[in-house]
Length: 87
Image (cartoon, rainbow, N blue to C red; front, side, top):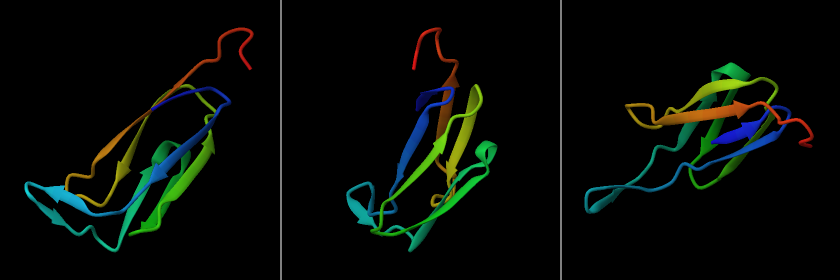
């Protein structure tokens, strides 16, 4: 996920059915989404998607984790500088 410094970032978190092989497996009743660099920790209830929003205040690469899975699936928010003249 990419953003520009000063931009509004929206992440949609969903705790739902997951598929392993041929058989779907029920997700836990809730999952936690964590973006430590921005001091964000949100609990997402199964079946109730949640939008997590924040302003990208500084440049860098910031990991996030979904603590639903044993391996803590995650990704990165990459915040790039605004180019001169960008709004």
